[in-house]
Length: 359
Image 1 (cartoon, one colour):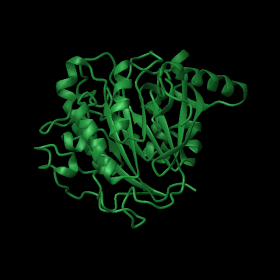
Image 2 (spheres, rainbow, N blue to C red):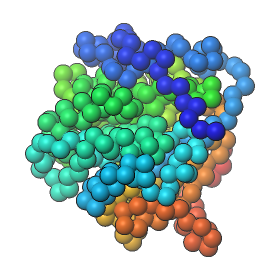
Image 3 (tube, rainbow, N blue to C red):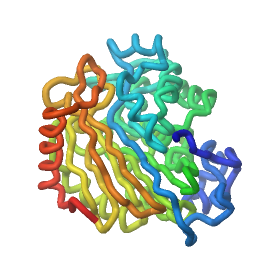
């Protein structure tokens, strides 16, 4: 069965600055999505001994409702297409929402700008997606007006979104959810921002925006803090180089730093093509899942899929890539010989990652 997620039991609690990662100046506006780190539905402190039931977490890549995909919001229950049953079959599901949630604002000075109405959040929920990250190079595509609209839509919907906020404390805030007795902490951050937009898009103590993975000490601190309050820590990153199927040195460096800090699963995207995945010191890293629901996918950028990671507590039992192909912007899972060929290509991507195929 699905939908066993028990999010925040005391959502909206104002926590101390220490519980917000120790950032001075951020505690004046307490994060909206921080949950009580001391409450677990099993009545047991996270991380303590006790048998855990395995849970399956599904991840997918870049998702938006741009161009022809906007029409799909007219039927939100089927907006994400034929992969919905697969997404719903997992115990917990997450994607990267690569768009601003607004119908207003002026385009930021960049090549591509994406936006969608607030109904996009309802479509994601209908598809069984439990949380999304908006920490990416399109999250503030329509400036501060668009950012305010995005934050207002998130607040009104109550839908869990990480990596964006009214200030840095909120943007870096993990989303906590208890799934079959396992308490998850989910953090989103971006390593990719246009140089001319970094200052205006990065959340600070006094400015709304995105959680930046360029601020490595801050991100590492947040992971360490989440490690204290969760059975398993997940970090979803926007990173890498477009069309490059091998991770950059800075990706490898950051992955190692986050694993040392306590991350159990690290996934991400941005390259628009899949990258390799595997184990790093017993934890799981996927450097890039490619596009998922994406308007302009073709050729290599149409290679897609769903990554399913099975955990028992913080132990990663297995990871499985379920390949898909995007047609008309919509992903469709592959079968038969096409699936086997896609799996072989995906496994070959691991060669340049430095990751292990098994624990």
